[in-house]
Length: 72
Image (spheres, rainbow, N blue to C red):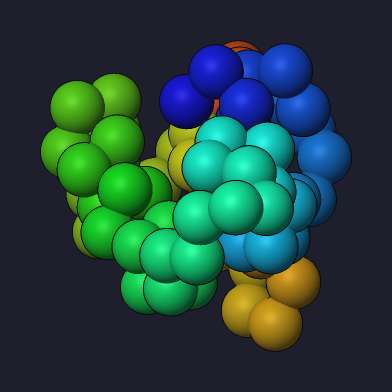
């Protein structure tokens, strides 16, 4: 979550998150990121089916919107 907050309103790829959080010496799969995003949404999103803060951008990555928005 810290990485997303530090890059608020920016699109960050799964690879960027993997490198920043786990580093180059660890090789978790990109599904690891998807699972963490799911967990974060359970904590922070009022309605997980319609996220306002943590958005998935297909083919690009994720975007955190601090003020929340209904679409990314």
